[in-house]
Image (cartoon, rainbow, N blue to C red; front, top):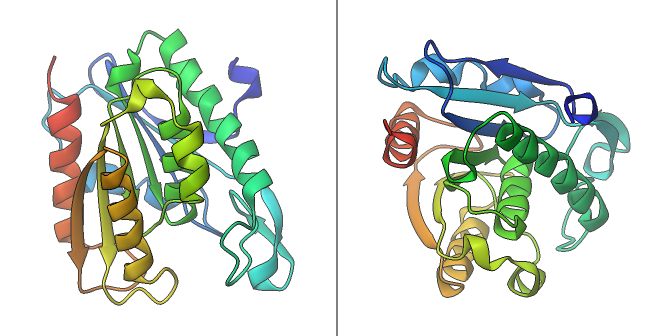
Length: 223
């Protein structure tokens, strides 16, 4: 299985890992983008969480004039369903990481899928359709892709899964209302959504990092 995984960064805990966070970056970034956040989380010394930061493949991106960059899907402005084939392909790649972690002895309920922007789209898409119960989903500065398809394709194993959503109220890339609409759709579908908004743009702030740490501790705290 490991030979099939996308290139990625792993940060091992001081103690043998009993939980995993798979964290997906945004458009044009790579796995290194959120690597520095791990010490900022200030998790307890007893935490045994493995962090995995995959690198998205390079692909032509319409919003950037067809320039090739790391992207989970092609982003076309003002098109609600563009990139669906890419999203499905990226979700399969992330499912391989989930399966690999379970092969390494991590219970599916002790895995969190996390993502920023495009990465959050993939985290939500993959997690809600995955056929084993996950611990939760962290979706920051992002949105839910294709609500009607999600309702049809979601898997019962992850009904009512905890989801943390956080967004900047001044985000020029993904308007906060799009995220808020996603939140309402997820709540309507029965998911346990925790919502946080901050007076920032398309970025992450320290207060948000503190809430992320709380979310991780709530779900992946000491067994």
